[in-house]
Each structure stands twice: as structure tokens, then as C-alpha cells.
Image 1: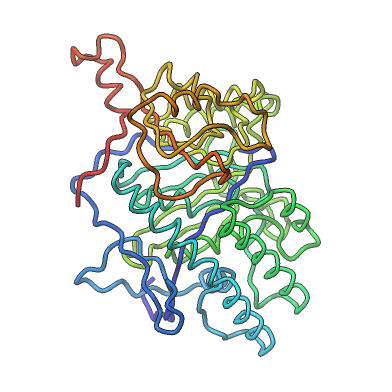
Image 2: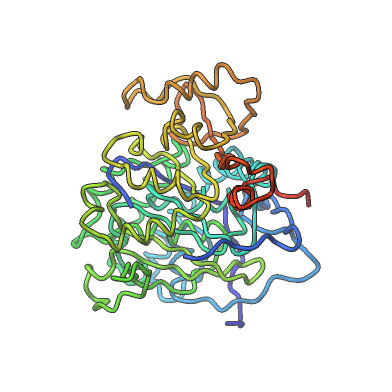
Length: 433
């Protein structure tokens, strides 16, 4: 896929996620043979002084590969508010896309400086990174950027939520009114994210649908991937089959029902590395899962990977989300979460939990007694580490993350099977570059 490269500007970074609705492998990857280079900071453009693109790897003497742009990669750049060719656009559409790009640039500049870059630096110091990792992110919405900044070297990201994915969106195919509506929605999502750190699911759902230009989350996933420095090679519909495997959906691609879930085939622009982004539409509530044994089997496998949870509305602290909660507790190689994930009182029984940031109580949107044990831990423990960025619901109680790894099994010190199992689930800081 080597050929000419139009890219004169690239990518800032992005993340969105608020699971107010009810949401929705591979063997363990071997450790890397050598540490990967530390990601470089964004580059400022002479015109605006704002970060113009995100480079997931540091510059080297080897020039970045020349990649052939696809229809989906050009569409993703336009949806992200990044530079892209005007071929195929009439003058009015080109002007509209230019105004849209100008309108979203300041918010992304602020996000990159205050959240994106500090999050990336923190992840390099505090989290394990292994080539070939899969990161599982339940209750995610379309929030690719947060999980990518936290685990920038993963090979596959699996996001699960309850909203329909929908087909790719190509601005050049839209009529004027449709383009205005689509860009207005994307601009609202971006503004909510860069100012608040999340978007409101109900507001977005009101503007998705069969008769709307944006029919689901796929256009957002495309835009977020573009802002994270990826070429979107192609997008295809997927589904979980009867054998609990993710496969290409064989349905009619002209029908919306075929596009419940999607796979984005991505290429890292700085290195040419192939990355897979799966978005699976799935209801993670117990009542629906018990009707789908294939979904339960798939989740049991996916929770064996590294798991990340953010802005999940405290759903796993409720009795009707026991399956996904218990699968994570039983299986996960590691769990990184904010206070909205699994209750600390459950987590500390079987896991060693590192605390980052500050926490005194949950957001006032939720029952005030939730995570009282976590608040006590933050108040009493002397080993709470700082968190140099905001995440989650951004409340006055502070932003926090917990990194949970399984405690050694009984007798693990002897070096037997228990110790080996514990080591396989450990999350140690990445080696210094």
C-alpha cells in the first residue's frame, strides 16, 4: 500500500465516553524483546502555535512510510477536522469543512496540552506495554483516544458499547443540509469531550438513526483514529458468531442492520504498523447476556486481556452486571479503571490496587454511598500517587485511576503454578527507554 502521501497535517488526539446506557482473542502476548521508543510530543504549527498532529513514536533517522490514502482515510481526516484533499468536493462543501476544522482546532489544542500529552507520558512511566497486546474496553462508547494514549503499542483495541456503529460516512457524498447536520453533531461531540471529558449518550442518540446523516458511532471512531495518527485503511461490518468468534458480517452492506458492529483496519502513519480497532455493539447487562451464550463465551475470552474501564456509570457496582464484573475479576491480566468501574471493596480482596489521583465521593449524578470503601482508601493510604491529568466525570472530588493486579496465589512464593499464574497477570511499569 505504498504510494503518494497527501498528508501535510496530521493529528492531535481524542477521547469520549459516558456509558449512561447499558453497554457491551487471543492468547496472552509474550513480553517485548526490547522497549519501544517513547512517543514524541505534538508539533506546533507556525500558523497557529497549536499542536498539529500526534506522533505515537519518536522521530528517527528512518523516514515515515509513504502510505496510499484510501476513501476511508480521506473521509476520516475530513471528519476529524484535519487537512485533506478537496478532490470530489464542491466549493461550498470545501468551505464548510474548512470552517469546521477551524472551529474544532482550539478545543483539540487545549485537550492535547492538558490531557493527551500528560496521559501519554504517565502511561509510559506507570503501565506495562507489550507488542501484540489486546486491550479490552467495555462500556466505552467511541472513546478510542483515551485507550490508545494509555496503551499506545497495542495491536488490537476492542471497544464494547450499546450504540449502533453504523456505516462509514463520506462527506463528499452528502448533500449540503446533511453535511451541515453531520459536522454540527461532530463539533458538539468534540466540544463536549474537550471541555468535559465525555459526551452525553442520550443527546447523541437523538441525532443518530436511519434517516440521519450520522447513523451511529463509526464516523466518530474514524475521526478519533485519524486524530491519533492512524490512516483508516478500510472499515468493515463484523459480528460475534455462534462459535463466539468475531467475523466479518456477511449481510447486505446497503442495509443498516448489517452495521451493528465494525472493524477499522488502521495503519500507524509514523511507522506503517498495522492496528485493529473493533467496536462491538453488545448489551452487557445480565438479563440480556443470559440469552446469548455466544456473547458470554466471547466476553469470558476478552476479559483475559488487559482491561480498561472509564466513565461506566457505576454499572458493575450493581447486581445486574455481575457477569461482566466477575469475568474481569476472574480473568483480567490487569485492570485500569476510574471510580465508576468495579467496587474497591470487591477489588481489594483478590487484587493489589495502586491508587492514583484524588477521590472523596462519586459524582452527584450517582448514589452517594457508592465507592465509600475507595474514598476511605484514598483518605487512609500513604502511597497514593499523583495523576497529572483529568479523566472520567471530572468532578470536584478529583480525578482518579486504580491499577489492579492479581495477588499472588497461596504458596506462590515457592515458584509453583500459583506464582506463574500471578506473574502472567502482573502489570509492571514499562522499562525506561
